[in-house]
Length: 196
Image (tube, rainbow, N blue to C red; front, side, top):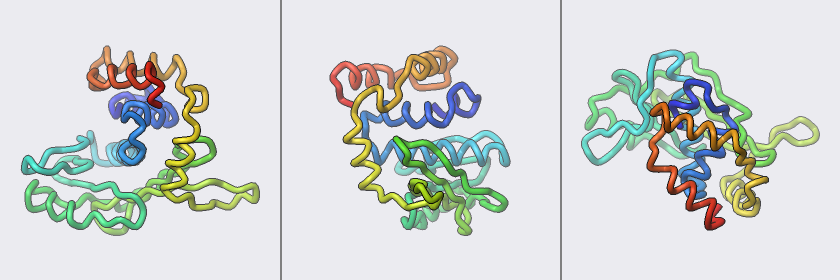
């Protein structure tokens, strides 16, 4: 999906929906990947092409690697220190520079819940959180459990917004090599069995 998003074949909303479905509604993984892909896209505009889930030492993966730099993506208030140390020692990578990187806001998740991806003051650390904008225009933090609850209780294709355009974009990405075609059976199974 990263290649499709990076080349503007799908937008943020289509990316989010595609990752949620392709993860069999494994919400934690899907939300992490939404943050990871958005962060990688922003970093690649500054530093060059990104590699996601870069294998280091055969036992771990750096969330994002560009050149000799690595970044780890974590939900808000979770530390990436252990993973970054491993990226340095096992992968011979340096902690990625977050200098000059701006937060990415208004990433659609579901309904009126949005995600924000923030580039920490700590090199190599990227965090994400969820929010809603109230009627008064103020942001209100949404906890992870509430995001999952809303996703769990909005289980229809119409509410998820899965359209022919998303399916067509995914098919185009498969044809052009922009996505791993092995996810297609997983998506079809999810749709066929109502496992969404």
